[in-house]
Image 1: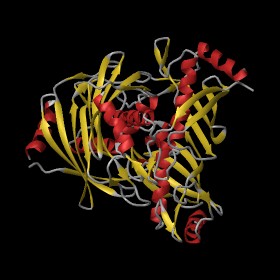
Image 2: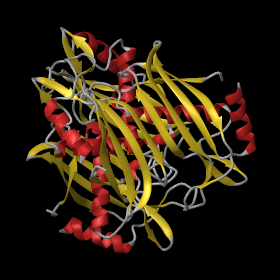
Image 3: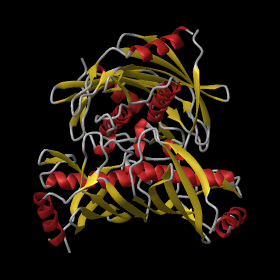
Image 4: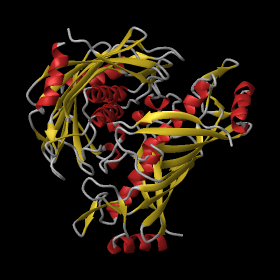
Length: 140
Length: 140
Length: 140
Length: 140
């Protein structure tokens, strides 16, 4: 089992909806924020550059299951695991908890893309320096 | 095959991110908006009342796969299908397209809950009037 | 008095917060959406091109005063007025109402900028074709 | 001059728009987050209770002027000052900066309200314990 990378995230008033709980779409923003924190922790940016090109990671899939509501002013622990590193894509797993209570679990697959100026994303192999570090996390 | 319920949705500047495309979390807001439009079309509100209690539908799961980017000022056609009506939950399917181009497909399961004042959601059977109409859509 | 340009906007569940009303930050998104609708109505896009350069309108100021809450599933009428057209900037006024009830009033000043690839916005004179149409609205 | 209360805030990818900078509506969310952090620092919650009633602070006005763009992965310093404490309302001032560069300045007026179950906000005097602490900040 790989050791998860943990980030903590505060639920703000603006994240809630009229049902009195965090809106479900915020979980996807939080997953992305945790993914980006993991990448920064490896020394990479959300928009990294390799070989003079902009490299970024749009999603091809994201899912989440919700076990219990997250509420305003709660701090969520988000554990990110690198589940699979393919040639061009990375799949992450996410576990949300609050004080040990299960809140949600999710998964997200991001594809390495270069974005030509004004053009559409083109999938490319993950740069080896980044892939090696992600694989190390997946195998940890 | 049930006939889908179609809503059209305009992609706004505020829905985009620095990659120049609609942020993936917006697809979940759009799925919810389409679900609520379908419920209104059946004569029900997002926060309906039955027997003096507030009835609403928090999600237990939502997933989406992304085939091509949605861009600012595009109109997305969102086809909603009622895939399954359980005693307490409804599963919807979503197909996003722009001018016939596949953009994304998603699924979402919402659970019927009553919310006591100040309390946490408690799952309950879907009120029969609503369940009957949802089943009719699923079987259409 | 110039004739306002009117857009209608539906308040969605995702726009609300735990106080049971539309979150105040949504009013700013709605003002931007109305501004962009006005520009499209004049034949211009949010990201228009003139002379081969991308032209867009970041804000330098935005304010809003709130008279009464907007609620889920309400349709807001938003009246946009072009209040002032300067050499490089446009100031818009906004009046939000629901069924004749005052909801909010706002103002927003956007500055015409060209954005060099990868660079920061540089303010420029509004292209004359656009300025002329905006002035016509302001003087209407 | 009162000593400002400072919070730091990370600009996330999801806060950006296709112009490559933080969307202007995010500044209002950030102002609210800073206001709530200040209240928590005084020992109060976003939804505090006094005399068995829910007390919260909807806005009656918010404005912001933007001096320079905020970008993804920047940490913004947000200095909050209590500018005025009225009987029922509080006015805050905000200064956003990044590494000493001016980013934006804002102001926000929030009104103390009790919210009856299912009803609309009713403005009330700020509870004295809270008002005293806010005045102390304003006079500091």
